[in-house]
Amino acid sequence: MIIDAESLHFSALNEAVRACGEKHISIKNCVGQRYIAAGLTGREIEISGTPGNALGAYLNGGAIRVLGNVQEATGDTMNGGEIDVFGSAGDASGYAMRGGKIFIRGDAGYRCGIHMKAYKENKPALVIGGRAGSFLGEYQAGGIIVVLGNHKDGKPIIGNFCGTGMHGGEIYLRCEKVPAKLPAQVRAERLEKIPQGTVRALVSRWCSLFGEQESAFTEAVYYRLTPDSENPYRQMYAFH
Amino acid sequence: MLYEGQFRNPSGCAVAGVIDRSGRPMSGEGMIEAISVMHDRSNGLGGGFAGYGIYPHYKDFYAFHLFYSKKEAQEETEAFLGRHFEIVYSSEMQTRKIPSVRDEPIIYRYFFAPLPQKLARSHLDEREYVARCVNRVNAQISGAYVFSCGKNMGIFKGVGYPEDIGRFYRLEEYEGYAWTCHGRYPTNTPGWWGGAHPFGLLDLSVVHNGEISSYDANRRYIEMFGYKCTLQTDTEVITYIIDYLMRKQGLTLEETAHVIAASFWSTIAEKEAGAREQETLLRRMFPSLLVTGPFSVILGYTGGLMALNDRLKLRSMICAEKGDKAYISSEESAIRRIEPSLDKIWAPAGGEPVVFELYDKKGEREQ
Image (tube, rainbow over all chains, first blue to last red):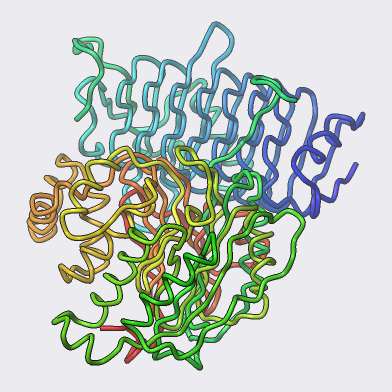
């Protein structure tokens, strides 16, 4: 089914998506409609244009593919499924994810993957192709964040205050030198290439989705950030 | 009747701006269309626009836009302004009746030149003279409010959704090289015509999405310099801070940005020597003008626009370019509605000012 979103209010668009009995839905001319596919499961939705904030919030399963950029809070508190973004993403992408995967081809904004958490089989993953803004993985409690640094504007791969308040999960950064100014409670471990297992599968998936050569991303130096249990938070979290 | 929990207003204010850097004029229609995409960010309690270059035939005169809640206020105000200015032109502003725009005040427009003798006797420069007269009207005459007072620019605002306010003021009939606009979701104030954005003083205009937590600290400091914060809203104080820093202290746009959205001390410590010293100096000189809390602001002035986010970037903001045109918006979708194919689009970092100016600003900027 094809839905032309050109002149639809977000509530009408989302009602049309929910009411549609078909598995495949193509949304054309999207222009800022919020909450698309919120809480849905088992659908495959392709979007052209620019979807609005909170795309795929509380997503339970299925797949969303965006042939352009996304705005703020993509995959907010999502539980499962996959969101593939062929452009860049705004602030707070993957905010409080509890499961599922987000793949972003380009850059991402501030506060991506903050409050991400994992529980048993629910292990969220956020893969950012370019660079990420400040507060990446702030208060992260579980799951995996990967930043591939495939950007060409010369800016650092991450902004300030990465992993502040982090107490679980992992962040992988593809860069030759350890980023300056990581919080004292975060440990950075140099890896000469991406390790086998979940993270390698994520990087391979990103490469095949966006047509990038896999060896350039798997045979590269990464820094793996994890909470430093030797240096726990001794007082209430307060940074400045 | 709806109760709490039965209704959710997914709001948060919206800002947008456009400038054609070659100076080519465009009507207000584009901004109306762009801001309408972000309809749900505001709640119908305020909308407004600022246009630059819209009064070419009166460009040497101060264009005053006034709200009057009663005729007596108009008489008192016109008597006061008549003692300080030569009135070149005055008329009620032409508006269009829109069902959703109600309870509008009396709206008048004047073009003024300061009375030369009066100005000379005041020992003030012309812009300060005008600013003080505006402050007098807004603080002392009940029922009168000057909401625009720059040269060759104008602010149009009111209570309603921004696209309705744009049509109410017939902005398709105006042409300017730059426009900003705002959809409002008031958080602390009831939402009155004067409280809508943009806020302006002389040719400065400010639209703002956010809620600054330093309002009272900023207000107390800025009122020491003769400003009167009459509306208890944070955007008004931001406007006065920028006017004070740029017009009275002579700071550049970038320096002003480093005062109001100063980097953390830890971030400043890591900068190169020159930048570190300059930012340290600015933070030490104007600590009371640091604006904290979430904000995304578009500043309009003669010849340009500046976009600025708070240092933590707690509000969204996107910049884009297409040929001579540059765009700023809370959401990318609003820009895409009026320009689907862009040369460049990016999100500036928190505290990082982005300035778009006319290629040829010579003689344009009021001194």
